[in-house]
Image (tube, rainbow over all chains, first blue to last red; front, side):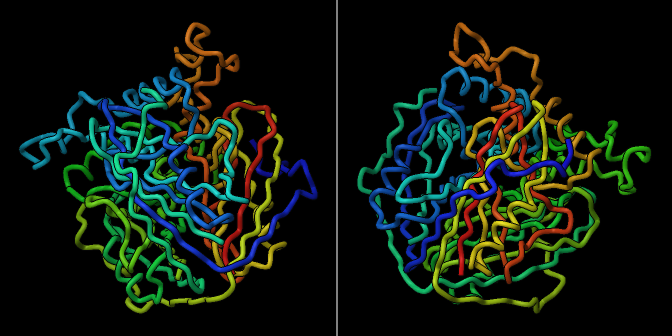
Length: 163
Length: 163
Length: 163
């Protein structure tokens, strides 16, 4: 585990340069969720939105507008999505004491402390570069809306920035 | 947990498009912390800085310039902040053996391995879109400076990019 | 843990403003890893790439194009890197049951569920502001490629955006 020996395999990688008038196109999409914990790909909706904008090169930022629903990047295989949900239950169990769930200390009646903590670990925004109109992502990388306090309606802000 | 059934509730959501001359305005703010672990909203300072810039549409990136203090997005309710601190103590306990704290293996005399690991899980930067001069965030989303090795003075870089 | 008392130490911090023609320069670098779990600084390669671009002010986004390798920001001290690897083994143990590793439920023969879950907690992209051609980062902040399913060849997308 050294920080010295790493070197790029390609010494002359391909470099792309673009220049132009800066544009921002944004929207908010609303997604319904049906389970308390649910991981669902919203990749198709993001790609569809990018295609509706005039921006071919830049970046898209996808943001959850909630504190109990986050965003993840991962595969959409059902077995793995189940493992991800299990991991969040292991790391942040639902049925333990939380001050946020204690009526003596909190006015929140959703008793959703676990959902806050899980979303916080998941993170709330994903940024993916765009080149020639396409997301620059790995083969298996999908954007997953990570619902931790459903069923719910969740607002996801999508902002495309570039040229 | 399917990746198929997700669909936007609104089929024709509102789309905003802006175009103009690209600007970057940045600063570094310094915050004092008083406890070893402390979660404090810096949302007001970020909003105040954005209002001082000519940028009305774009994005703000807020970056911790430290490895033992991170940034989170969440509510500011006291009970929940206490639960967040407890979660970090559960997931990354302070009083266990770490090589980074072992004088035989490390020249760090702060014995703050837990602070590094907690900040690493929290993350070091938050990006929030800006539209018409306002942060595009959820009702309960506040930017929290997550101090894990205080008391300290922490530098937070704020960069507003857009038009 | 109050959200009220925080205030910037400097009431009149230095503010930098830049304006100009927006440019995007991007590339994909490939890094070889030699261990199953490996944390390696790629900071030098990122700085070197930025220096090859005409962009002096803006931001760089570094993205892992994989689901089992992430990116972290932290020190490169060997003892601490070992603690980070141990933390991921504690939080997401390798040798427990995962559906993704079960041939009855999954067609993945790499049995790398732990790598997916660890990378997901680590995160897949890092964004660092650039001013006057230099990364705006803390003294100890290095970008670490976090390999969780090596040895492998990993593609890291680097995109510099600004003026």
